[in-house]
Image 1 (cartoon, rainbow, N blue to C red):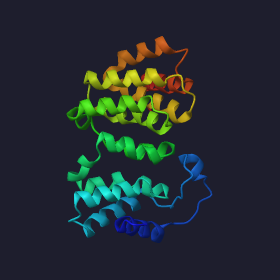
Image 2: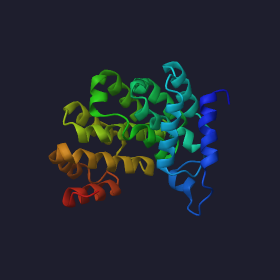
Image 3: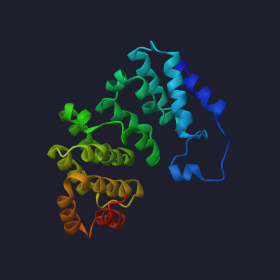
Image 4: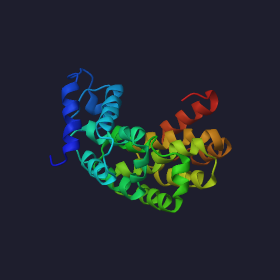
Length: 234
């Protein structure tokens, strides 16, 4: 391991690992990578303490660390990059569309993908660099890697809730339409999630879309979306 910052973080994971659990975490998370049993609060504290120890870390050093983490041997390393951002917000610009696309190469299972894509990017983040984000997300939707196809949906879940901008909803429905026939649960659950996220600002369009695509959409997406339409609950 050539990155000393990565080694420092990994040493903390090993030191604080609470041991194995009877619950089949690899199966649940969809990963075959090594898992250190750490609560989310513990990992967040590790991230906070790391930045406190290295307040002068440069952007180049931080980027090298991210590149190392996203090919790390453990699940925890591959999910750790975004935990550092709240403590070094000025470095969020390093999470460019191109880099996100590349980092997804080595992320497997819903949790590794979502750790990078679920809540990192707001509508403002996407819209300020819309040309590049739109191009990259469209490319993800037709990529052979299922992690990228999932990301093309998950990346939009937060933004379509936070903004009614038609560019976001148009791309969301386009990607749902491209992926609605897939059977992989990695994709079907993300289709459901994005449809439910669209309800806040595009309720009429969601109802219309479900009615027109009922025979093709994943059953779980129809069931979960209609339940949210009816009850307002997840």
